Amino acid sequence: FFNAFFFLMIRRPPRSTLFPYTPPFRSQEGYRDGLLQAIAMGLDLKFGVEGLKLLPEIKEIDNVHVLETIEEAIRSAQTPQELRALYR
Image (cartoon, rainbow, N blue to C red; front, side, top):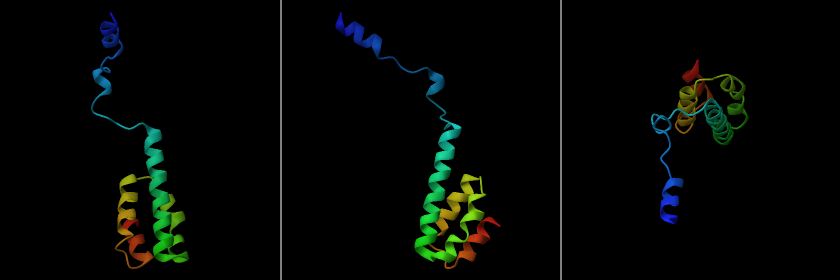
């Protein structure tokens, strides 16, 4: 009896919730916020005060893909102006 009850408790989720997975809006906002924090830290560590001057402009960007590009480019950029060229 217990085995039958156990298998009734474990059911597959409805097929519509399996794939494709699209993150909810809040997850996208959380991801964006995380990217902005990573960018702020990278700008501060690499360029100091001059790099942090870009942050107000970067916070205006809603496109997560552009933010990802900026975050990745911090490693190789030689100046804050090189980063600014990515989003202007």
